[in-house]
Length: 355
Image (cartoon, rainbow, N blue to C red; front, side):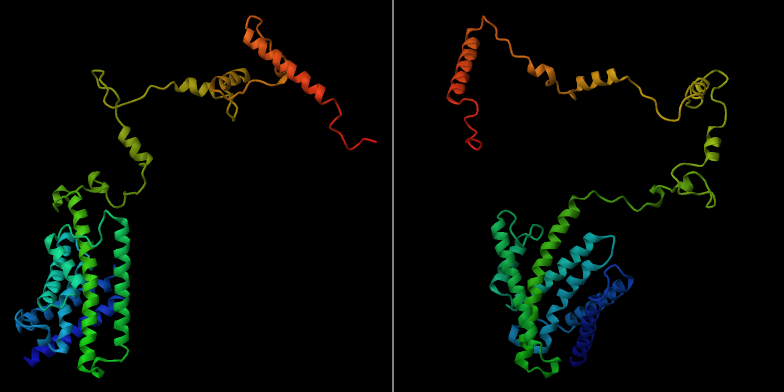
């Protein structure tokens, strides 16, 4: 059993090295996808070898696992993390494979009772509804904010703890208890990130289910391009939207009417001679289409002219003598004005120029 363990250690170390290389590459680059495929194949070999030698058994407990073998519990986590990053046309299959790997990872930790109380509750809630699993409730915004802050703080604490333990370079210098604490902290951080990933996978699968189905990959049903449809060679192909004059003339060539008088193609009747004759002595600029009076009448009809002011504003309003209420109001207004002039004679307000 010593030889397989050495192979697992070498393969797992190689996969972690490829993971560090992926962090420095663009996700859409060819080198990234090549390293990703190598990492996935290496992790598949690690999982197959671990299953072959029964590295983890459901009859064991956490204390039965050696400190050096604790790191191999995260093989399925890395498979779930790498799988959705592949570029593939069947996105739904990739998400399901990733979810299956995450489930195997959580199930293995649960069989060893290595999940915390909060993570165990989330795992049970996930098992109750895989397709509807949501890490944050969608109804209560306050609860969403509190849960998100708490989980971010928990993740930050785990990273600080992991950084504190990893200050010593190289795992060989660790004693057994420190090495075990290091791997336990790593597994707690991976578990924390696993539930985030399962939430995103459930949301993306919902969006894929609502998307219209893609057409079958049948080459005969695909639309041919412009050159094939028009039987044109590569030399005569052009990306111009308007066809050349020669093509227009060739397309319009031929008689318009048949011998029986039926139209063979659509056409327009134009008074070309009269239009050319009218434009002989026409000025280059555009001529007005209406007079000033017509323009003002149109603006008045549209409400663009405000009436009032000028001499019309100086004409006093004539009160109807038969309207006794209006006449009384005008009389009272005149009396009040007379009283005001008596109380305030002209020049009474000027107190600066008095001797």
